[in-house]
Image 1 (tube, rainbow, N blue to C red):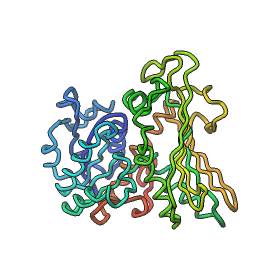
Image 2: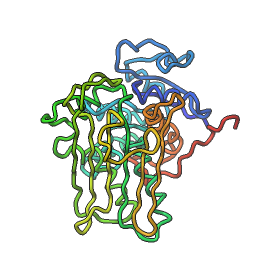
Image 3: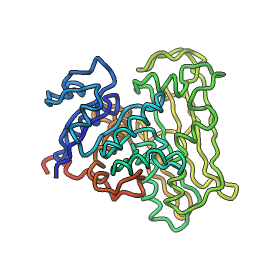
Image 4: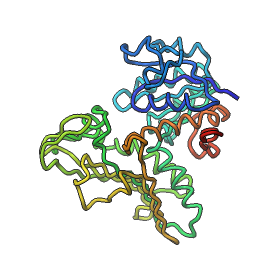
Length: 352
């Protein structure tokens, strides 16, 4: 069966999703929606560094939805445009089109109140929506849950992202949202009270649901370190004394101790914070299951261009693209990773 898909957004994740759609023999690109006027009218393949695909990018949502696709691959950033992203998703779902999306990330496993509007829009349109990626996503839903399936007893599940973001060319996220390159006494959006829980609380709650454990509370913790001197990264300049390393945790508490922990260790240079956890290879997602026995699994990232951040973007894109058939087949509503069957790279083996 061939599924007709529309790509919604051609940023860092969207470009990789477009390449992934083109790579899958069971997907047909029906349209591309873009927010940047400079991209309107250009061939979709040109936007992703491919040859001509014969599909022209448009800024008109009605035009792409009129193609009646089976699914929209939604990769439009929501970090600084949450209301617009929610409006887009609502519009797509009410048009009766299924969605796989990388944002807003809290929809990965929302509480009832936060998920209700999107769930209702999906039911109204008879469509399904699944929000996922690599983190929040595979690195802290199916990967840790699969590892716990070989446990006798579990004391704690810890999911970690340990990455150097120096090659992540997204200044809005790095500087405006995460606060890198900003004064140490300035509180960035990400570290405002409650924002970490909004973004990654879904991870902790979903793992708790998958492990059938009732949490008493979810606590936030973070620390930062300054740049020892001025240096450049792909997204811009980081001045001496401004934020250059960030470590945070979301701790799912049970009986006074953390039983499920989401931790990020983010550096802009490898030599920063040498006493913090170090990655396997250039960068990794790590799962530690403490109990009987103890397990540590490192998912090392590396693109064919030698960059780990490229691999992370591709992982997020392909987590969505590869799930299109399963989401189309699912019943209407807001889905979570706990609702879907195993999604594999079926049909992607060279020469198969």
